Image (cartoon, rainbow, N blue to C red; front, side, top):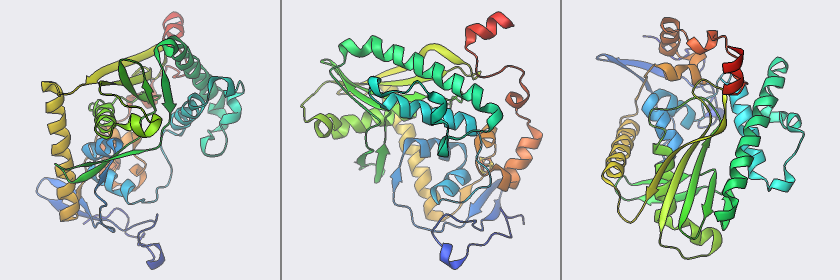
Length: 323
Ligand code: SF4
């Protein structure tokens, strides 16, 4: 039977810490699982963890338990995202003109990709700042990159942990933003702002943040700054929702779906085995160099984006003109 890596057994001093862990690959029927679990589940669920679990339970477990990996994937995309989020979290007057200087330390990118990364980050920051200026007159209060918000969900007996990119308040509603600076669009991406909105509403987060009372609607926005082809957009693309006193039928169905996935997560922690589920998401997985099933899947399904001729750091209009 194949293993994740037979040579990498954790040293006793690394138990429970980020380490090269031994994970046995178990085949059961048509499915493959990895085991074992090395530390108990704290019963917390963040929306991004849920998406990762839906894609591949094994990747979720390995990230959750802090498994070490050889080389992170999509370094440039992640650095651009970090720079844009950091910059937009600052008050307008404190933002820098020297965006290139932000691509250092944890945000460093390979030299040959730095010019493109800086250009993309600058463009996205400009688009986000323009949208921000347009909305400013109707917003009374706003907090960017707030601290994580925790809420105990009785139904699944789990703590939901959410961290919106922005929470704002107008006289009519509380806004919750989840901003995506990458091109990847998960099929269940709407789960993220929905969980954020529910937690903000259930905890009345505005009371803790601003000390104000409010009983209205929570409006959520999934905000894409790049198209699915990787090009930055001239204006953000939004997926909107509003959570009122009573959930709509569609929101109820979404909540049931979330609850079902969390129950699956609970089952996986209880049995101690997590399914290995190769797919397109292997291209984004940090463990792809260390996963026999993921490697095989990628060999059988080469990434078309890797061979695409279009440069991802151009706006759509420029690309269309030069085509
Ligand atoms: S490479 Fe693919 S199959 Fe392997 S852990 Fe990552 S997402 Fe799962």
